[in-house]
Length: 359
Image 1: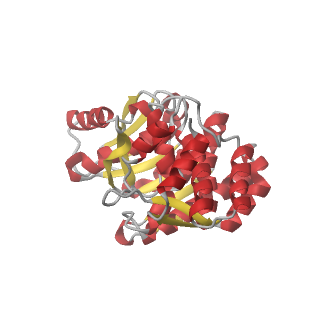
Image 2: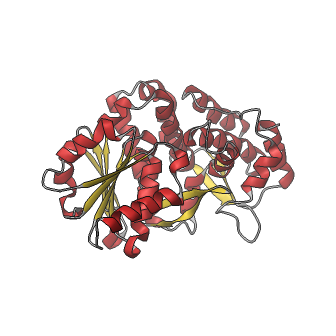
Image 3: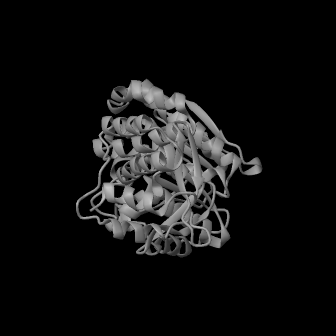
């Protein structure tokens, strides 16, 4: 088992990474559990892993709540259903929530934990690769609005993260590749050596080689933990974690959170950001090509569906959390391993990039 710590003073917490960790849940997080514990999961994950998790919590009389699967469940209504169950069971401020699932479950459970009685403990037990390397770490919780993704939420750090690599064996190939998009992101924004490692080891990673997978998850978590420790509430540095996300969130919204997975939209968004960087920061064209080649090698998209129009994307991008004083700030690349958040791009260059990818 590997352990990475997110250093946030008295709110620091561990990320446990390894095989067969669900069975050891009580051993790992006993101090964070409560007699009032509720596991939130969905109708796809629960039949696979809920019983195993509950057996790993033998002395805890945990309640359970299941929601439907999918991004379209990431709503205020779903969050409210969690709050309602907590109230019905008369849970108090010492309760603990456990999020067993992917990014949607983690985000909506975390947001419920942030809101219930002004904040209660929660533990992330991510069951997708994307959640293990990204959304379960760092305390960003949110639900979507019809006009924009993650527009309603709060910063609320988990008490612990348990990333059991065994659960990834059941992950469909497409969802696994969507998680690889976020892994590639860390190489691009902060770790050129890791990007090169991914170029050399992508085949093994996609085959879910145990050593490759453990290394990729650990390095990704260490990269994110280091950034979050320096900028918890995204006042500066942490925004680089959004490489590709301004484009990607607009793509997801344009597709009504259907058709594409989050990681697929982010992959296309990173390609778009790389090519805009060539026009804006001096990022080398050859390096932009390396980005596309690695994304394609991972089986991820570097082009958009024909149904998306550039005017639609540009309008949706205006509803972005990185906008300041009416000016959009984008995460761009200066070189592989170094990203910058900047409003300094020409609108004409952005329009050219959108035209390259959308009709």
